[in-house]
Amino acid sequence: MSSANPYARAYQTQSILTASPGQLVLMMYDGALRFMAQARAGFALPPEDFRRIQTINTALLRAQAVIAELRANLDLKAGGEVAANLDRLYDYHLRRLQEANLRKDEEPVIEIERLVRTLREAWAEMLAGHEVKVA
Image (cartoon, rainbow, N blue to C red):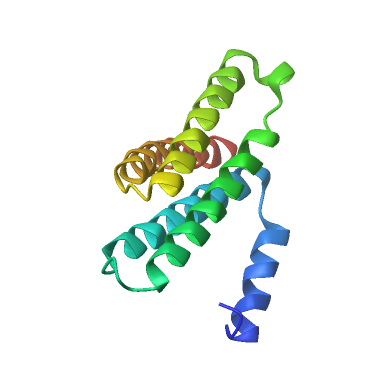
């Protein structure tokens, strides 16, 4: 990724800087899903391929970092029960991804990928509904 087109990197940076808080959350969900997909691609490599372990480890650590950031930015006071439930859910996501990485087991990744995709879709729907109401 370090050899990415500098124009693409500038565009990505600009997109992040100009995104609303809601869009940033959506982008974070997309990032977590992208990293979990990379981990699953690592699981598809033959066991004797030296890149397998490194690919899985790196991708899962990145997915965990994104989810940890989502969790760290929850406002538990203002968010009430919804924020508390998300906090517990993110904690579960982190524990399952850690387990997947330690055991090199793809099943927890599939499970968490499905859960994060559901959250992402709900978030996107909420944002779309909000934009319609504001317009």
